[in-house]
Length: 87
Image (cartoon, rainbow, N blue to C red; front, side):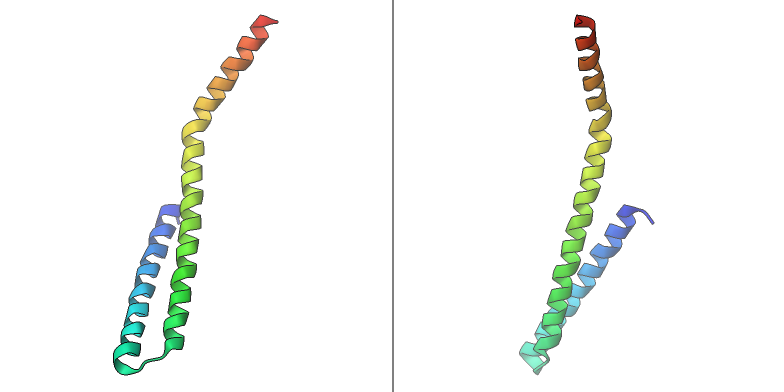
């Protein structure tokens, strides 16, 4: 499974958990539901969001490395070859 698919699945899970959290809060306010369930769902949303952020940062880092590595290698080779010619 690709990183993008995993991120999309995690995003969907965050959305579902947030919906469940909002429903739990509604039940607490209108019907006397359990604060414990609402708090547990909120903790789940926060943990999932942290995981999603970490995955996004890793993906962004990999994309930057892929984009800039060839250019940096060319620049380094050019610099090294220029220094060798001067000796």
